[in-house]
Structures are given as structure tokens and as C-alpha cells.
Length: 254
Image (tube, rainbow, N blue to C red):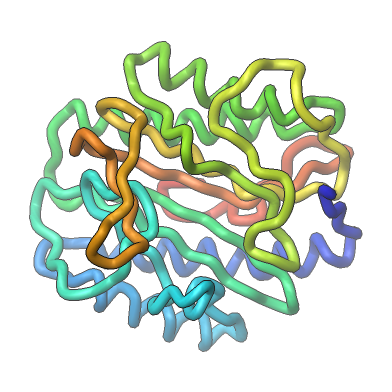
């Protein structure tokens, strides 16, 4: 069942979304060569607690950190640790905050120093995919319209759209119904209604869309072919007046 939120509940999510967005922006500003992903995690945890929130990821199904930090061919769920960023990397940063009983979730992918033009184009296209999907988040549209917007744009430019990982409902729980593939046919799926809230997160690759799970930590998910991957995400509400991005200032993903 897709849970619809009241105006009061959306206001709480919007406040939590501002914390999430500000945290992601802070992390983006601190991405530079030599920084470890563990240092970014500590920065985010302190920031979230200082603003009255709780890092939703920490302890979620045993996840050991407050953010996900996923470099290069790692798509999502990277555990922060000793990895030290270097020039030419890209790093996907994913933040979830619980505030007043509600979760907001946002992600961005950041270049570390100079990266090749093809990587700049990958990041730009993934950001555009999120924007195209956001534009479909209108009352009366269907969830298939959202996935189709992502798929049609990415594939028209020769990129892979990860299929085994999905966008999702979000609210009192980090993962609520429904699961939303980042591909699909227009005019299919449940109809969007005011009060629905979703975490929309295209994951786009320079190569194929197949994935592999790390055997080492059981969390990190990589492209199977080793190609680079970008990930942008916002928490978005469907309203009578169109889409409302609750994590609007979320770094480059805004």
C-alpha cells in the first residue's frame, strides 16, 4: 500500500529534507584528494545530530555507518572506511535523515578534482534523468511514466540504467511501497496522488546495467563490468500543485 502523507507530515518531512540537503552539500564541499570516506562519514554524523536529526542508515539492517560512500564503479551502499579519495575519482554520497519520525533520503555524485569529459557527461546525464523523473511526479501520472523518463533519456545517450536497484516510497520508513524501477513503460503502474512521497534515484552507468554484490562486505554493489556509475537522488512529494522536492538543496543532485 502506498502511504499518503498529510500536510503536517509533509511539513515535517520538508524540515528533515532541509537537514539532509544541507548535510549533502557539506559533504560535497569537503570532497577533495586525500580525504577518507570515514572522515566524510564522521562529518555527516556530527552534522545530523547537531541539527536534531538521526542518521537513518546507521544500524539499518546492520549497516555500520551514517552515510554510503561509493567510489567509481561502486554503485551504492559503500561502507565508509580507509579509502582515500584521489584526483580523477568520482564518489557517490548517499544520506538519510530521520527527523520527527520521518525519513528523507538524497544522494549526489561528485568528481574529485579533474575528471575526463565522458565522466562529466555521465554525471550531467544522470542529474538530468533525476530532473526528468521529477517532472513526472504529478497527480494523475503513473509510476511507469517516472521510470520511462529516466530510461528513455539515459539510453538515448548510450548509458546503462541499473535494473536490479530501484527508487522507492519513503516516509515513516526508509523503504516504503512501492518499489519503482528506473525504467518502464509510460501509462503503466499505480496512479500518482497528492501526499505520496518517493525517493527517486537514477543509477546510470558508462557500461552495462548488470551488478555484482561485494563478497567482502556483503553491502557494496558494483557494476559487473567495472564501468563507472553515477547516482543522484531526491525525496519528492506529489502535491496538487506539482512535484515538491523535499531535499531541494541536496548538493549537485538538487
